[in-house]
Length: 169
Image 1 (tube, helix red, strand yellow):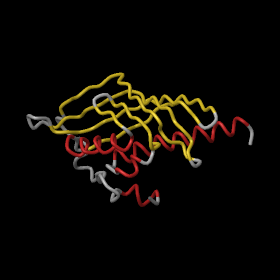
Image 2: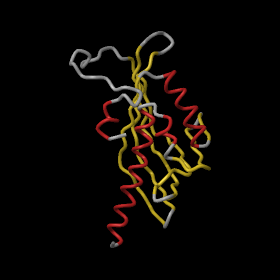
Image 3: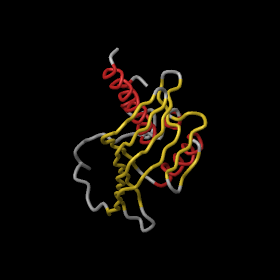
């Protein structure tokens, strides 16, 4: 395989790992979320830091108790591969809904970047070290929901979400 095709394949596989992380996080799937880390990994999300397994457990507890919904959207990635090691900077937007202490429904948005060191293990790219960088954030009261009566189904925070069936998970 020529070098450009190999590079495209590596980048695709790394982006798959990043998407798996977001899917696991957003669907509150501990196993899927923790599966993207090597055993001796480290995740630095600011106030929450730990090995991939510990970080996942702590963060999942916070997500389930402090948010009503969570969605990650990934933007562009700059990826450099060197053998079985890689570095990646990936822009993201994380949007959650929650209820504050005064009982108001809130929309919380965080724009930032995942800065990852990855390792290839058993033909799969996994996160060795992650640092999350905050570029901006905002919280706004939800005063209306223009799709509340549109008949759209809501996402489910489990493997009962329709995405699992169509993805064969």
